Image (spheres, helix red, strand yellow):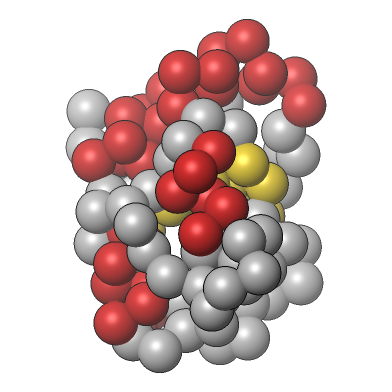
Length: 110
């Protein structure tokens, strides 16, 4: 199955209203830097927490795109409208897109 994928350059800035950003990285990665307003569900918890996720169009992110590709494949199988961010948060950061941090330090991708 091919996974729907979008390049950072193809993602509107600012993000459109109604678009959900799902971050499937681990807690420490999320805390250091993420897209503001992102829903955080680590990849391993996704099946158990599927009911918590909004059903709106979802952009799925991780560090480089591998975990999020697996998450998108799963979400699409469940009938969800999900797209993988090619290059993940590293590409997001490299493109100068806004991020926030929970650590009290400037946001960064770890």
